[in-house]
Every structure is written in structure tokens, then in C-alpha cells.
Length: 110
Image 1 (tube, rainbow, N blue to C red):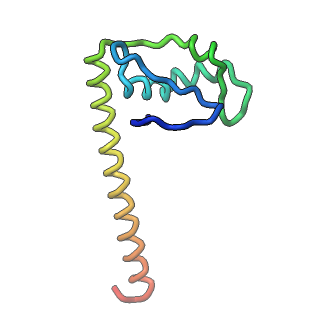
Image 2: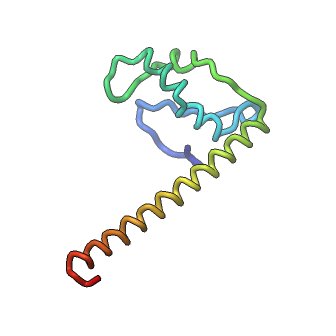
Image 3: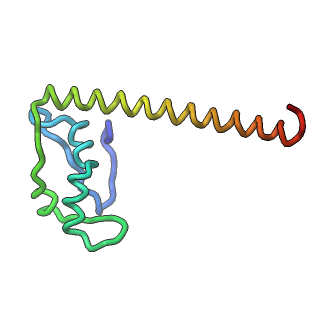
């Protein structure tokens, strides 16, 4: 999900949403959804990275809710992602503290 113009390889289809129909965030989440991945898998014979041609990509029928719901959905997802990031940071801090305690314990310094 880019916020400015950028370059991409020839294997990538740059997709720009029509803001009057679909938000950038909703489209991004839609293209990362299990439903889209299942659709892609039907056409792909590659093991690791699925590949669609333009016609197959354009043939994906997606639910497009009203824009206000798309924006609310995106805000909820963003909030959850922030919470997940905080949890990962706390877990890393706990891992570091545990490793420090282990080190002290094995040295007999506790």
C-alpha cells in the first residue's frame, strides 16, 4: 500500500482505486484477503508465488460496501494492527528481560 508514486517490476499490476467507489485501504485489504487468495490459487500452477494474467485479475468479483463502511473497516483494521505491533514490541521486551534473567541465574548472580 504505497502513499506516493513508485516503480514496480513488470510482474506487478499497479492498481489505483477509483476513490468514489473504493478506498485504497479497503482495496489493499481485499487483495490480501483469503477470498482473493483462494481465487488466485484456482488459476495458478506455480508453487510459491501465484500469478494471474490481467483478464483473470479483472474477473475477480468482490463485495464493495458503501465508502463509509469501508473507512470504518479500515480504521478498525488499523487499530488492530497497531495493537498487534504493540504486543510484538512487548513480547520482544519480555524475551529480552527473560534472557537477561537467565544469564544472571546461570552466572549465579541472582
